[in-house]
Amino acid sequence: TESYTDWNDRSNAEEWRANWAESCNQYLTPEQQIDHRSYERQGVEQVPTIHEGHVAHEMGDRSERVQTNNDIKAGNRDLSSLSATIAKIQEEARNLFRRIAELTELIRK
Image (tube, rainbow, N blue to C red; front, side, top):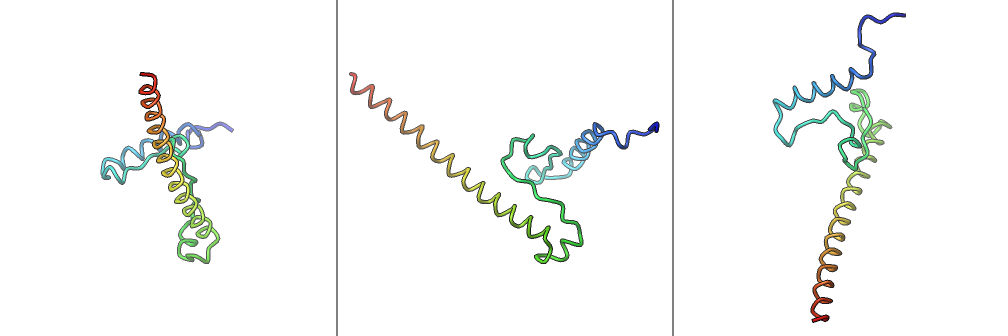
């Protein structure tokens, strides 16, 4: 079969998504901006939710997809909290190492 359109060409999907994001972002505030790239490509440590669809959304918590997304969102909140705690611990460790270096220098003098 010969294709005369590029609808099924995967490389076009990337370009179309980028163009869609660019078009949308012209009308969105910086906090609302969208990014067509995956979380992984953005460097975001977050698990993506799954598409619910309007039927599952209307079903609410009775829908397995909605429950799955709620679990993912809870996990992402935990992950964010842990990441913040790790960042604080790393900053404290850097401060302690600096202080140890300063004290070591004082002892040598």
